[in-house]
Amino acid sequence: MRVAGKYSFNGGVSAVEKQYPSLLEEVYWAIKAVDASEHKTKSSKEKTMLGRMLYSPSSINKAFKTAFKAKLDWAPVRVSCDYPTSHYVEDYSLRTTNRGAFREMDFVKDKLGVEVQFGKYAFMVYNVCAKMTIFHNLGNINHGIEIVPVKAFANEMSTGVSYFEQFVWDLERRGVSNIDIPVMIIGIDA
View (cartoon, rainbow, N blue to C red):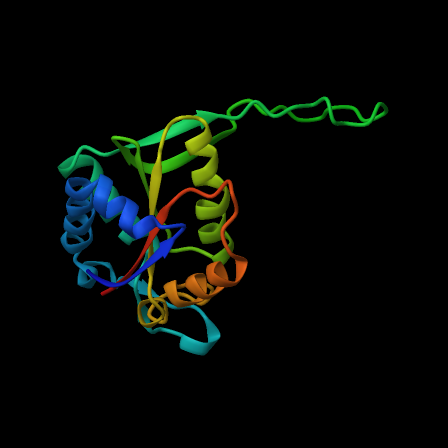
C-alpha cells in the first residue's frame, strides 16, 4: 500500500515528524509492507455490486497487525473500563455488569498511538476526538496517527466504509478543541 494523503489535526503532522521521526518511518514501512493485492478476497453480496471482488477490511487489519506487532514490536494498549452506576435513578435495578469492558488502542510505541480504521465514519471520529484524548489523559500516548483509506480505495470495499477526504472535511469544519491532541491522519491507497 502507499501513502496518498496526510492531514494535520491540531498540528499533528509537524508534531509527529519532529518528535517521532524514526517511529514515523516504521509506520510508513508498515503501510508499504501490506500488499493490497493479497486482500482483494471478499465477494460482494450487496445488490449494487453482487459478485464483485472487493478488498477485505478485516484481512487488511490483520496484515497491519502482523507488520506492526511482529516486525516492528508495536503493541496494543488495553485499559479496563469501570463504568459508574451512581448515575442510575433510584428505582432502576442493575441488570448487567460491566465486567470485562475495555478500550484498546491498536498500536502504541514510545507514547505514539496508531489506529488503523477501515470502518464506518463514526469510528474514525471516535478514534481521533475521543479515544486518543482518553489514552492521552491516562498517560499512554502523547500524539496519534490515524490510518484510513482514501475514497478511491474505500470504493473498492463494501459500502459504508468511510474515507480520508470525508474525514478531513468534517474535522476541518469541527475545528480543534482544547482537549484534542496532535494527530496525523494518513490516507492510504492500494
